Length: 178
Image 1 (cartoon, rainbow, N blue to C red):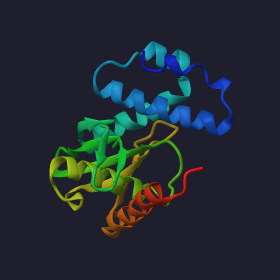
Image 2 (image 1 turned 135 degrees about the vertical axis):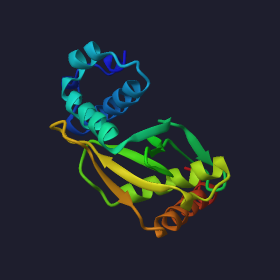
Image 3 (image 1 turned 90 degrees about the horizontal axis):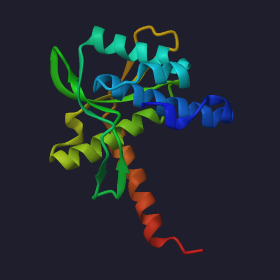
Image 4 (image 1 turned 60 degrees about the horizontal axis):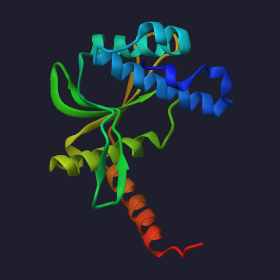
C-alpha cells in the first residue's frame, strides 16, 4: 500500500521524519489521483498525512487542477542533472502548461530554482523552451484547508539554475579525485 513501507514515524529523527512525511504525502497525493490510495494504510501508518492529502484534494477540486504527469523522472543531458517534477499539467480553464512542486513545509527561496530545474529538464525532453511552463509551489495546509499556490514568475530563475548546473558539471569534470 501507499505508506506501509516507510514504517511508523516514531522511528525517525525530526528532520528525517519530515522528509519521510513529505515522501508519504507525495505518494498519497499521487495514488489518490490514480485511484489506488490505500485509505486504511494511510490512516494506520501516517494519520498526520491525511490533512495534507485533504488540502491537495481541495486544491484540485477548487482550482480545477489536471495532472498530466505525476512524479515524473526526467533529466537534462545538456546540463547533466536529473529531476522529478511533482506534477506537470494544467488548470481546467487555462491551457497553459504548469509545473507544480508539492510542499508540506514552509516557503524557501530555493523552491523557485527547483521548479526552474524541472522546467529545463522537462522542456528539453519535450523539445520546448523551459519558459513555456508556468511554475509554482503548492503549499499544503496541515489543517486540510485548500492549499496555496505560490507562482514562480521570475524568468531569470531558469538562467540562475543553468548557471549553477554548469558549475556543478564543471566540478565533476575537473575536481581532483580523492
